[in-house]
Amino acid sequence: GQQLNQSPQSMFIQEGEDVSMNCTSSSIFNTWLWYKQDPGEGPVLLIALYKAGELTSNGRLTAQFGITRKDSFLNISASIPSDVGIYFCAGPRSSGSARQLTFGSGTQLTVLP
Amino acid sequence: KAGVTQTPRYLIKTRGQQVTLSCSPISGHRSVSWYQQTPGQGLQFLFEYFSETQRNKGNFPGRFSGRQFSNSRSEMNVSTLELGDSALYLCASTGSNEAPLHFGNGTRLTVT
Image (cartoon, rainbow over all chains, first blue to last red; front, side, top):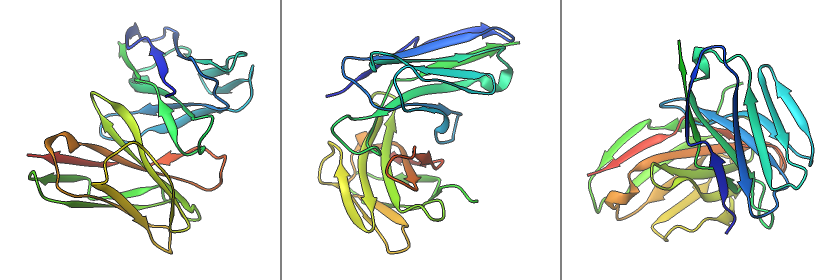
């Protein structure tokens, strides 16, 4: 089935630094979603991408839908302590429902003061 | 607008028992999906309901079932619980076919 390879698995960065994480797949995705999950909570949608090549920003976050439709990246600029959490990429199976998402394994982000 | 509400937040059950989890979607959302999150397998799709009908089902055994009511509220049931069913069960809703999912904070199920 469709798998999403997300990297890195974890990151330790200094406050104020920029962060980049990415997801790749062997299959084409028509939508890429980026979620953030804080401890004890459900994933919260950060950015949704619907078109190959699309670059979308949400505050200090920027995400891009790869031109091959097989990858996506998420950048966080000028990190702050509240950026700590697990970041997931996700996308719906190409042959299935838009609600049946495949998730990456997550990137655990730690921001050091 | 209230978000997706899941109850209870925590549950402890014994092997062999059954459990029912509840989800109230965002007002106006008619599609409800369920996901299981474990450290080993990550987030995995269980099933999706729309207008009281199951539209899609993930690769889980028949012990996992669900239903949706006319007010769009949904329940999922796990029968004959196994230790491996310990997980965070997440419910998500969406208001249209192409809109992204909005997740609740989950029910943490521990099976002993």
